[in-house]
Length: 431
Image (cartoon, rainbow, N blue to C red; front, top):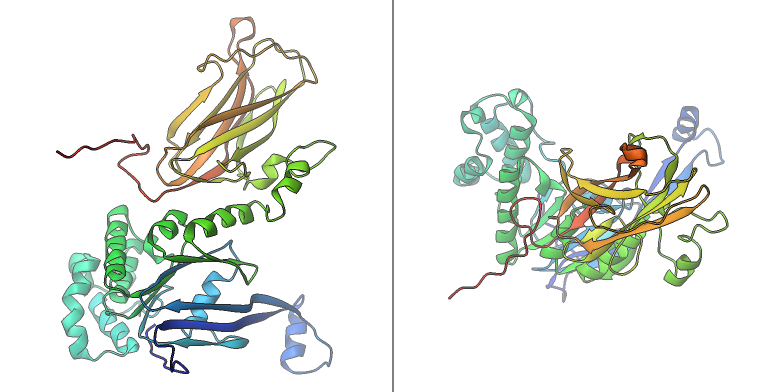
């Protein structure tokens, strides 16, 4: 979607987007007949509950700024982008935009599946407001960027999902906007196309374009943005430097917005039946669990370099994998282990107390052992899966007491990725 609005910007020529007390309220009905009653105005009392997707949201974006919006699912990120681009109307408040917008929200939403790729390029260009002559000038750039060959002459219904998003992205990115608005669209296609998308994104930034984007890739937020806005439950929780926003977001993810000291007393000690460490983590509902459970892993967590319980860790920082094991039987020499896999299931790294030559004293039934594996996080930015284990060699036979494979995910945030899975921390000298 592309449009230009110039309203009330006298004396504010440096402002590209102004969001003023924006609210978006949805009516939630428990029963379909309540929706019908409300639509037909058959009752005077409310048949619905109000849900504030956005609640009195305010912010400004200056021309030439790159601003990221982060927050949990349901925080209102996509909603505010759709209101800014005119896809949704707000319940209250106003949005003022100065500049032509290219919005990468729902790629290919305006495509006709029966038309060829070329026909859809002209269809979308016309919807944006370009003449055929203007589209002619941009056509080769669009085709080169999409790089789908002769498929551009075939109906898009015959395209693979990858070809479809490549063409849609190419159309959206090559219209020379003044303001670029992106909602997770930089992660489309294969790794090579993603690289091309990020290169184009960097070109826009160097050209001084205004960029507003939503992403769950916290590394991209930290790397590209001048500022970041953290939304939580439809409200602006924080606005400031990307690093500060990401640090606070990590606490939002694990419900640690209260005082740290208070959390140290209550949420994480698990004394007197209090909350488990793992309550801070998204647990895999399909975790592979097995073993005799003569020793049982009863709790686990990640701890970042600030001492916060969080599954979002910055690359290059110190972090700890922590686990708690309850013994149901006497065990002489237990071994404690952890490992990380990528999303393809490839085991990347890990260790155990036997490899590290850590002496573990014999355990008796009822004992609880807490083990902390502290290390520098040098995996590349991305998503990983944690596995935990407690094993041993009673009578010389290898025995699994308890294993939890792919029990939860770890997100590594990075502003610099190198080749492969692991950063070798290479030092380069140029003479």
